Picture 1 (cartoon, one colour):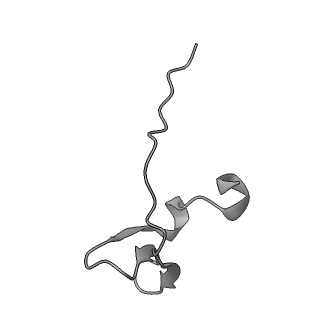
Picture 2: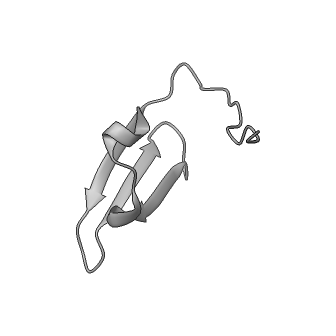
Picture 3: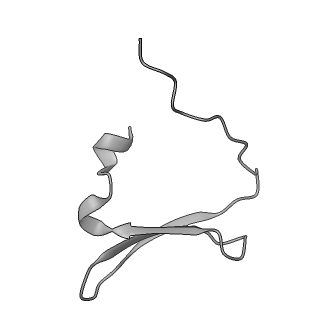
Length: 55
């Protein structure tokens, strides 16, 4: 049996989340809650999950 590794979280009803790709020496995928300062995550684009993988 595999352990449940997905933690439940609360999502704010007024959150506004956006995603972007920043091109550069290493392309970065960025996802951010624009309603909160410092609420973002970056990952090298090659390591980001594809949309079908998120479903």
